[in-house]
Length: 288
Image (tube, rainbow, N blue to C red; front, side, top):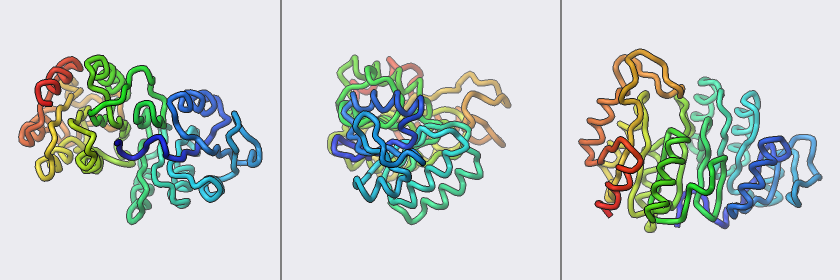
């Protein structure tokens, strides 16, 4: 099994005819993604690689029974594309744009309340169920089907760790990049119950970093409901105090969200924290 998406998920690509949208649509098709619609305002009625294009995500949802969408939309249009997908009732909404304003994400989080939609990102490489469905820009060769659920705030670290997992025979059920912004659409603590309820997920990897409280909240959920081995890799151990790091979410304020506080929370939850991808693999092989 998997979480959020699989080979049967009916997908629409917002911005399918743009430079990035058209390039990554072809790669997502190669991964097996069931792309049944594109969305480009003003190009409704046309097609791309035989995929019908609609003017709005709502039209695509009605005509093609869309379950998931991915937006290759510039930051200035990303917020509206996400809001439109929520209004259309799309279940899984991925947006890779970076630079979405914090106020916009606060509005999106409020709009999500009471809906059944999941927003992955922004500022994310996306999510992938290997060889079934890819909604994103991650390199497919790093991934393989298998028993490990992965969630990450860092795109490049997730590529590296999944590559090591795959080489060791530990493929992945689903890999979710929640994004590196301060307010992501979804968070580790919301995804953990999904992996817990997936019978094919035998172990979980969390790739965290300094800033925010995502790791501390995840540790709290693991303490409450966790039954599967969890291994974490934490970035930012050597970050100088007070210095803004690459991700907007990696900003420590008022002493919260430090490397030490996250280590303490994970240790209290029984999560093994490693410092290199190879150590993550070794720890999982010992636990499974």
